[in-house]
Image (cartoon, rainbow, N blue to C red; front, side, top):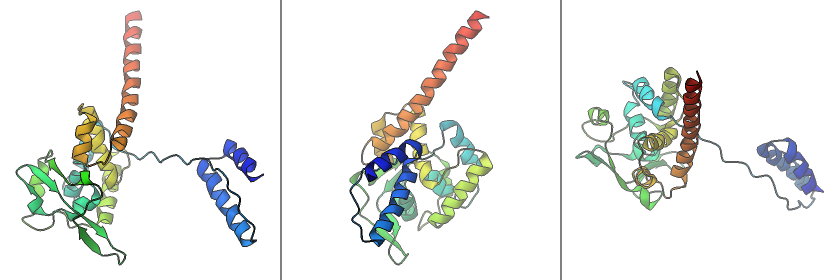
Length: 231
């Protein structure tokens, strides 16, 4: 039957390939007016989004320095979302803090619209200015960033290529903030609050991945210790 066919295919092909193939079969059955049976498809794993590790962040910062999207990139490294960066006004940055309130998004007519209502309650937050260069780059008034999200994205990617670091987009810099927080031994709750995540799942995902990497490094250091001792 169809379920058995899917099960066999799942042993040989990636979940996404099986799912896409079943979509074609479904379209053909619908075209023939044949009832499509209920089946269980293999779960497509969530993509593992990239981020800069703590050693790469400073290299990236130097690569983006002086570029027209530098301020936007530095704000993303503070954990701000792209929509928050685009919607940020100079009046929201003062006394050493960024007061994140509202976001700018595209409406159905592809026009920028500022919304005071945030994605989650935790999105409205006060973020300390951690990179002093942010204050140096602030315009006198108005919107903090005038570039479009697409312009920021393209230039962030170019900066990554120039720097020879992990290829990241603007949103991935937000996760890079999370990776640096882990390296500096921030607790996950602090990272969650400053980054404005609704729950700990994203933060803990990055923390777990980095913990696994550091564990492997620890093992290698111990192996080196015994190797030297043997010599």
